[in-house]
Length: 230
Image 1 (tube, rainbow, N blue to C red):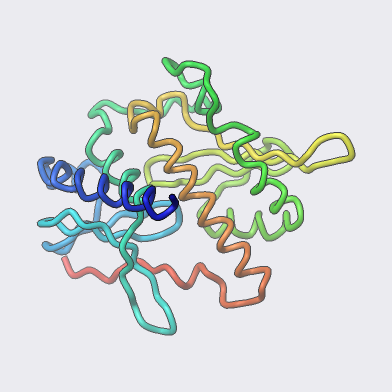
Image 2: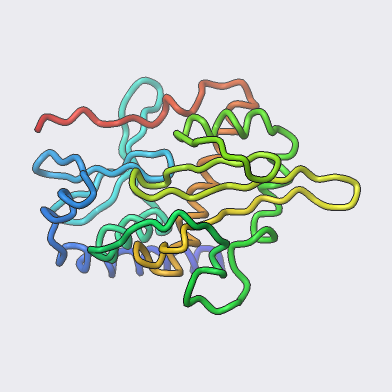
């Protein structure tokens, strides 16, 4: 079943790639201050650098392993997040500075979504290693805020932040982690995309925390900004 689901994701990713190529890439470069080298566009997302091939639309994650630079195919959630914000974002989009859970965004119906209960496992993990969680948030250019027991505002895209609000567990309540979005989020992306953005960010945080706990090379050095000759 898992293989079938993954194949469906891959099929959908390939199906929407031609749609990306219909959009004005020069406008994307101007609007979002993207770096480009003639062949590819580059964008930071959830702590990683991504390369978008201008002729094929293929998205790859740039990383460095064992001293050499490698480019790995981005997964469905990464690709959909990047395509959506570059193609859908309204020309007059602006952040409000007001924050809420995704199901409280203006115009969104109240159904099960990205709230405290959606990230219970991550909250429990963070509760064991709060200092490392804070370290990783800072590595992701997070700005500490006075929310919860630990709060950070993190730019998932250089121009689009989210806020993390964490509460330690106690004898009565489990640890809680909430991801809050700006009230104008739907000017930047579709509602469904907020789930992909959340998944990508939490995956980055979790993997970097695990690496720090294991005492390995800090994962911050594994993802690099490409050297581009303009």
